[in-house]
Length: 194
Image (tube, rainbow, N blue to C red):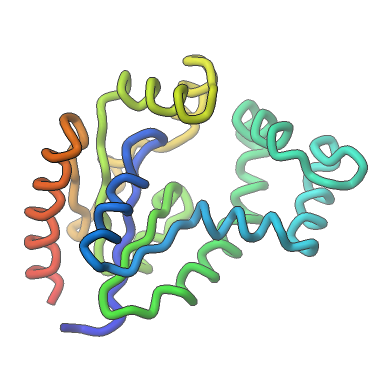
């Protein structure tokens, strides 16, 4: 097998990316998460200082407030672009540094928005019906349907941006069905990519 093959797992909010990543980990693959890296960055003083400078209205007493910042960027496309331009390169640099296993997978929520798909040997796009996504995110994050839909609308549609190394994984049934579909997809991906 070719060493250091990196695969991204992406999809809209509430599609089941974390579930797929957990299934990959259970199968013995190395897995990583951009969200985990982002949370780690929130512990670094230099990163927080940069956020406070970019969004002083979201940083009472000089410390960024996650909820204020989240509300701001999901209601203001220009603010979201500034946050993405600041955060994404830092997150991706750390992610690629970590992905040194023979075959590894990373959950990359805004893969296409950042134009990072070329950094990976293949992309799994997890899809799920909108109603199920809204219900899952609402239950997970305590958000209203309107708040969830604003986050869904902030993301680009995945189907329009996939290339030849893009594989769709439908999450529209049970966990068992998703697991079986993932196994079939892995067989296809890893055979094609070798």
